[in-house]
Amino acid sequence: MSPLDASPPLGQAVRTPCVSLVGAGPGDPELLTVKALKRLQQAEVVLTDDLVDQRVLACLPASARVLRVGKRGGCVSTEQRFIHELMIREARAGARVVRLKGGDPFVFGRGGEEVDALREAGIEVEVINGLSAGLAAPASVGVPVTDRRCTPGVAFVTGHNGEHGVAPDWAALARSRLTLVVYMGLTRAAVIAQSLQDGGLAAGTPAVIVSAAHTPRQRECFTTLADLPAAIEREGLPSPALLVIGDVVALSPQWRTDLGLEGSTSAPDEVAAVAVRAATAAMAAMADGIDDSRVAARFQAA
Image 1 (cartoon, rainbow, N blue to C red):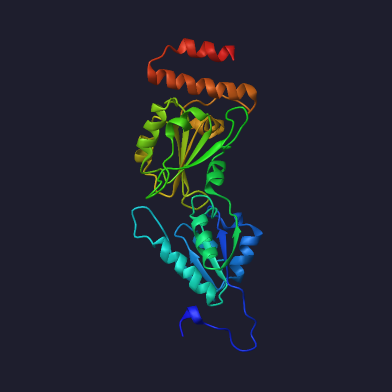
Image 2 (cartoon, one colour; image 1 turned 135 degrees about the vertical axis):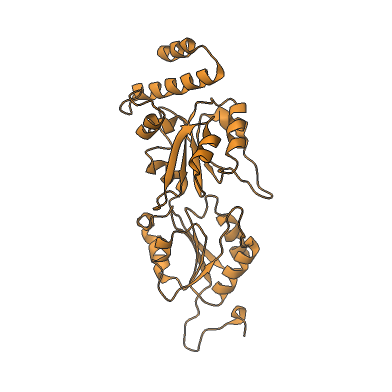
């Protein structure tokens, strides 16, 4: 008898086939939601991504069967269709199935595709959100992704849209004044940085690369948009890593220290925000050969 045809023993209640898509967060198991932890402790079969921290997997019961179905750029990856088939097979066999994903299942995790596949197969699905690295990584280095003094919002963007994916409009993003959080952008950082500058974003716009956020391997490098590719190469930052680009990066004291601007901003108040924008514009002006006195005058007027 195949697992697809498996039936429960006599007297045992039939369990409705169900899969839980669980967000594992950025790495630190203390950042798991209570509901996510409960599902992990109840799991019988777990299909896990490569990016899920081993400390999170340690929360599983010893009896749980763990199937590693990771996808990593430049590495041998599990085909998405095969992942769908595995989830359906295990759920129909009566197992408590958890599809465990780093971060949040619906933030660049193909969670939508997996939900569609399960529903088409008649499998119930629940989605348990996780803390996305797009929020947790910047926060870990003192960067708020939104701040009303600097930006009207934030955009989560993929740096690797993959086959059949929709490519970002970098020119539009450059004009948006949004904080940009770029996932999977490490290998394409040079193209991304140049595309944003071509779209009008200043070369001196603050930026930070955060690698392996909320793990013992975390590293970060504060820089500017123009220097982003060189900083990645110089520091040898590995994936997984996020790029965070925008004036909010300069609100982190570490950015000012690393770029030798300590003392150029103070407490995060309106005056500091203007100073941040002035420093950013001045750096862009120097890079572009613009008269700095005009830039200073413009921000004094502001």
